[in-house]
Image (tube, rainbow, N blue to C red; front, side, top):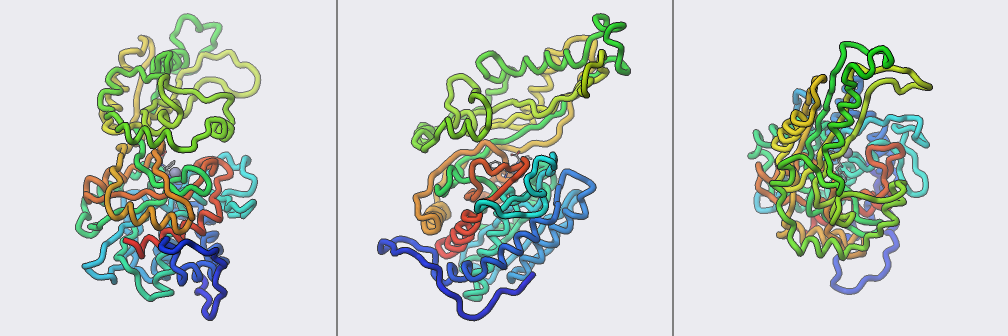
Length: 476
Ligand code: BES
Ligand code: ZN
C-alpha cells in the first residue's frame, strides 16, 4: 500500500453552516480530501481479490483477502491477527490506546463476497473495479468490502492526523457472512472478555434513499433448506412409464404450492406462532417514510408488486416473515423437447424470519409440513443449509444519539430509522453474548445490485460514510 502524502493540502470547500450544528471535524475532512486518490487505489486493490466464500476454488483468494485486511489494519496502526476457524479466517484488529475510561467500539464487517456468476451479465468484470456515473462497480463494492474499508480509513484519519483515537477499537472482520457465519457465533461466545465493548457498529446495509442517512431498527432472520424429491432410480421414458409412476417434479410442485394460501400467507401450521407484534410507534414511523411504490417496482423490473394480503410493501419486507423458493431443478431444461419423466426434483427454499421466530423451530415445522403433504410414491429429504436469528433494536442510548449527529454532519440531512428485510446472522449473537446495543448504519443505496451482476457502491456515499464514521468516533 502507498504511504499517505505529507505536506500542506487544500481544505475542501464547505458551505457555511448554522452555529451549533455538528460538523465533520475540519482536520479529518481535509485528510480525506487530500488522500482521495490513494484511498480509491487501495479500495480497488481489495476489490480485485475474488474472496468468494462459497467456492472452495477461491479459498486461497479468501485467505488472501483476510491477510489484506489484517495488513490494512496494521498499516493504519492497529494490532491485527488472523484467527483460523474450520472455515475462513476471522480478522481481529485492536487499538486500545484511548484507555479504560473511554468507550470501546466493536466494528464488525465481512471481507467475503457472493459468487459473481452469471459473469456475462456484468458490464465490466466483477473483480476489475471500474467507476462509471459516480459508482464503483465490482463484486463486494458495497457488500461489504467498500463499507468495511471506509471504517478502516476513518480510523486512519484519526491516527494519522491526531496520532490517536478518542475511543478504543476492536475490528472483527469475518470471511463467512455470505455463507451463514458458520463459525462466528462460537467465536463470539468463546471470547466475550476480549470482545467486551460498549457498542457494536456495523455498515453492511443500505440507506433508505439517496441523501437520506439511515439507522436500522430490525433485521430479518433466515432458515435455508434444500428439498430433494426422489422417484424412480433413473429417468424414464414419459410415454412408456408416464402415468404409472409418480413424477418427482409434479410431487415437488404440489408440495411447494402448499407453502402459501391464496392470500399470500405462509400456510405451514405454526409458522406465525412466535411472531411478536410490532409497536404502533414503529409502524407509524414506517408510514412516514417517503416510500414510492412505483419507484420500488421499477427498481425490481417486475410487472407489479405483490405479497401477503393486508400489509403494505414496506411492512411485508421489514415486518413480516416469508417463505420463498430460491431455486428449482428437475428434468429436461435444454433446448427443444425431450419426453422424459425425471428421477429427481430439487428446490432451495428459504424463510425470512421476524422476532421471535426461531430458525430451528421453523425448520422443524417445515419438515413436518412437508412430510404431511408429500404424496406416496416419492422419497423426500430435507437438508438444512444455514440460518440466523432475527433482530429488533430499541435504539436507546448514547451510541444512537452520536450516530444521528455524525450522520447529519456528513450528509447534512436528518437520519431516518428504517427496517430491513435482509439478514446478518451474527447480530443476534452479539446482543446475547455481549449484551450491548448494535448500531447498523449502512451506506449502500437502493438498486445497488448486491448479490447480482453490476453490484456498485456510490462514490459519494463512500466519501460521506468515511466522514460520518470518523465524526462518530469524536462524538461517543
Ligand atoms: N449485507 C447483507 C445483509 C443485508 C442485505 C443488509 C440487504 C441490508 C440489506 C449480507 O451480506 C447478506 O447478504 N446476508 C445474507 C445472510 C445469509 C447468507 C445468511 C442475506 O441476507 O441473504
Ligand atoms: Zn451479502
